[in-house]
Amino acid sequence: MDSLLQFLSLFLTNITWIGALELGLIYALVALGVLISYKILDFPDLTADGSFPLGGGVCVLCILNNIDPWVATLFGMFAGAIAGVITASLHIGFKIEKLLASILMMIALYSINLRIMGKPNVSLLGDPTVYDSIFASDDLQLAIVRLLIAIFVVIIAKLLFDLFFATQVGLAVRATGTNARMAKAQGIAINKMTLLGMAISNGLIALAGSLYVQSNGGFDISIGVGTIVIGLAAVIIGEAIFSAKRIIWLTFAVIVGSILYRFFIALALNNETLNGIGLGPQDLNLITALLVVAVLVIPKFKQKFSMKKGQ
Image 1 (cartoon, rainbow, N blue to C red):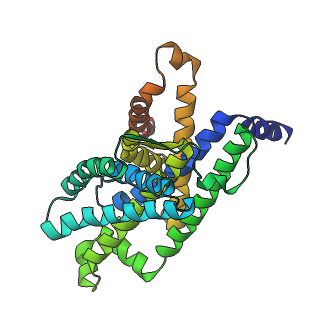
Image 2 (image 1 turned 45 degrees about the vertical axis):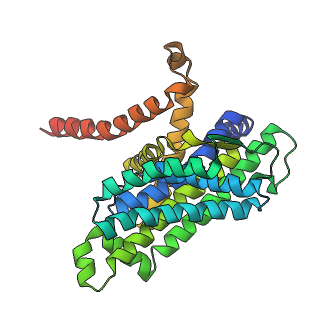
């Protein structure tokens, strides 16, 4: 018990680890969005790399125009939902392949985001954010406030996610992804369900982008690079640890996967051995790719080893 209290005391006084947990929770929203598109709808969607900065850009623009930060965050989320609807519409209306439709939307959003912001970088320093809802007197308290707000948003998102996919509409979305032909035969409007699912997916990703820019202190056009990989990594890690089938546990697994992913990255970036061989913050995407490869490959080696041991 004493060692646990010492660990918690050390954790709560280390801004690096608090920041890693906060980022893990923010990207948990991305992972939930990816869970809908890839796992529930079976829609390979790369729009995430565009909808993440889209949500952040719209949020920053609203805040700079004196709109309440919480309302600005919702506007960012709705912008992402619209992007998801357009991606789905390209596939449904013009019969463009799912992956190609998402790639086209991702490319288009890069220019759209630049148009929205007017320039690649926009600062929020000195402007109000959702993190100003609770007073903080120093950097440590501010880090804890950011963590608490991230926890609050993720809990609300998870509860709404679980409740929605337990409703008839939510079950219809799941049926559409599982077997579209059978769902259509049962009278489900599969096109509408796909549009709805993609809207929710990219809305969650844009919500994460809205929180990220406020935590980061500004917008940068490059923040969306690798978003889809991070989301997939969280989903894969969560599924590797928890073999969950029910939505309520699957969403929990994905959130835990996102948090563990950020901790792995923080450990890698702060590891003296890795720093000694030249790895640093600029190698974040490389470390991410290697981590995903490891998560995918290790279970296969473990299975082969178990089979040989059995023989």
